[in-house]
Each structure stands twice: as C-alpha cells, then as structure tokens.
Length: 238
Ligand SMILES: Nc1ncnc2c1ncn2[C@@H]1O[C@H](COP(=O)(O)OP(=O)(O)O)[C@@H](O)[C@H]1O
Ligand SMILES: [Mg+2]
Figure (cartoon, rainbow, N blue to C red):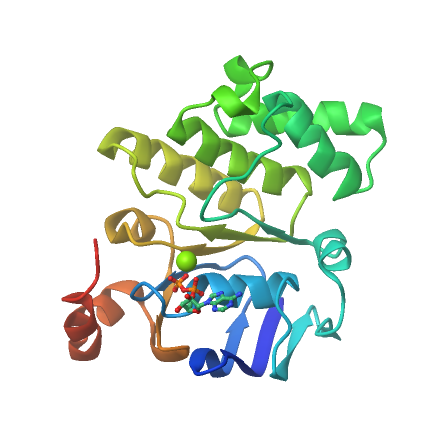
C-alpha cells in the first residue's frame, strides 16, 4: 500500500475535520474524494502533506510512518499536491514556477530541472505559456499550473484539490485527459472534486467524506447511486 491513514483524527475546537479516518491507497490507483463543503476534504490533504498535524492517528507512506515529518520531507518522499485556491509565485514566469518545484521539491540540478519542466509544460498544455508571468494567467491556466507545479516535484502520489471548478465543459474534458495521462504514466492520483462527472471519468474508486468521516467507499458508480450519498448530494453545490 502506498499511502495509509490509520485512525486519523483532527478537530478545530468543536469543528471535527477528521474522525478516526482509516484509508488505504494502493500504488497506481486513481481515487476520488467527494463530500459537502466543510466536510474536511482539504483538511485531509493538509494532514497528508503535513501542513496540519493530527490530534491522533498516523500516516504511512510506503510503510514508513511519516506522521511527524515536516511538509518538505513529505514532498521529497513523493507526495505532491495542488491547492484549491491556486497560489503560484505571481511575479515568476510559468517556467520559473515549475523550476522552483523541480529544484527545491525534487532536488534536481538546474539542467535536469530544465529538461523535466519542459516535459511537464507539454503534458499539462502550458508550453505556449512558458514565459508568461503567472499572475497574468486565466483560471484554466492557473489550474494547469497548479498541477504542473505539483508534477515538477516528481510525485509518486498526486493530490488534486478541486481543480475542475469554474471551467467550461471543454476545459474540463481537457483536464480529465491530462490527469488520466499523468495516472497512466505511473503516478497514483487522489482527486477531490465537486464536478462529479469529470471525477468519474478519471477515477476507479471513490470515497465520500461527511463531517470528517468516510461514510461510503467503493466503485464510483455504485457509491454515487447509494441512498446515503444521494441524500447528502441533494445539499451539495454541484
Ligand atoms: N486552520 C483552520 N482553523 C479552523 N478551522 C478550520 C481550519 N481549516 C479548516 N477549518 C474548518 O474546518 C472545516 C472543514 O474545512 P475543509 O477541510 O476546508 O473542508 P472542505 O475542503 O471539505 O470544504 C470547515 O468548517 C473549515 O472552516
Ligand atoms: Mg476544500
């Protein structure tokens, strides 16, 4: 198992964002996470990357306990992520943004990083924007850059947080293709997404989070059609 969460719990005062979460993700998997706003989805990613510390429980990457590792060490160990709200280095170019990830997140030399970043720009559809300042990008381009920056760290597991929101149908399809290609290249993908039809086109296992607990998991279509999920879904914003 590549990533394993054991009895993970976290609360902010009375707000419980994770309640005894047990979850395993196999190497090579493509899994989705859905749940209402405030369910604790982004917090779960923050716990996995080390931006948040759990109150109890543990996190294991490839069998190693990383619960007390700082975020840079987890990044170097192969955990890459995108943020729900993109925050690139606004005054750097797209290419320079990737270089930062490749050099500091992946320990590459500048020459190695340059080659790798060129490849990622192509895979994420950003080649023509390489020399644009990140602050001038459109929403789709910023989302692509989020994904590209995470890829520059050469992750074994890529955590994507609501990357399809606000895009047109066509842009969404392009994104699904890019994510599926990344998965096919051997990267394990964990994708939080409100745009469910996009998610279902790319993942083969689905977790549903509500009030910090996993309330359903399994085959995506079976899970989506289950009564519990249908009920929760009535209140979701998709
Ligand atoms: N650092 C924090 N301090 C206090 N409350 C937080 C913090 N981060 C998230 N929360 C709260 O925890 C809940 C879950 O947030 P989040 O994980 O962002 O949910 P989701 O991504 O599922 O919408 C929300 O009510 C949010 O306001
Ligand atoms: Mg969120």
